[in-house]
Image (cartoon, rainbow, N blue to C red; front, side, top):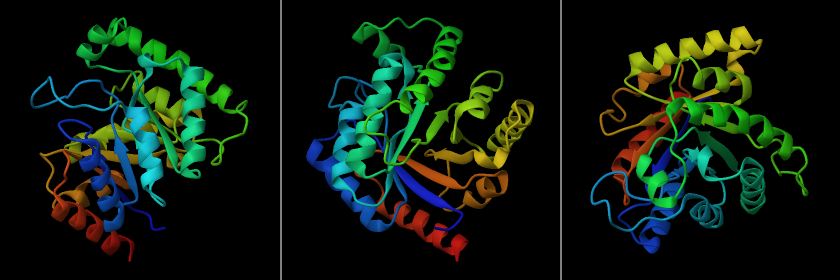
Length: 259
């Protein structure tokens, strides 16, 4: 595999399962390296009271619908599941997928999820503290799972750009980091992450840099700028069905860069 990878985050909202499954299969057929969903209970945009599917249950289906792509939830909300339980869930999906899972996780932010499902929303600080406490438990529990993970240990992705806590936790615990643009902001966050890696005694190259491409990003127009900033894994966030022309452009850019 070349240096650069591309993926799609297929939003599990405003869609039937049948249409979602078709988008998963079509995206893999076009040649992406990774397919992701998200971990929410309600649509994040458009009509709030509409179809929506739970992330980890759907991730099991994505594992069964695909054969070669990496898969993950971009990103799991730490607040919604006990960390030991989440680790066993991840190990199960890792086995179902044949070792293709990335365990994406973050502190959580969408208040409606918390309120309607009875979780304590707390504060941004308390949710980050909870994440910091959960990550060592996840890593310890992963070493106790039977059977052990196929890809052992399962790689952990942390999503978020908070410079004082989130990026420090990334340097301490994660194999991948996911951030957002624009490219100049992304480049700054990468430098902050590099500094945290140096402070905790870790080689910054050990943390794979991924970016979530939003509707504000030109595909493939500004991918070169993200690559220059340090990104190697480009994930297009999209409703279902996606714009397959953009997916093809993403794959073509990757192939050109890796040739």
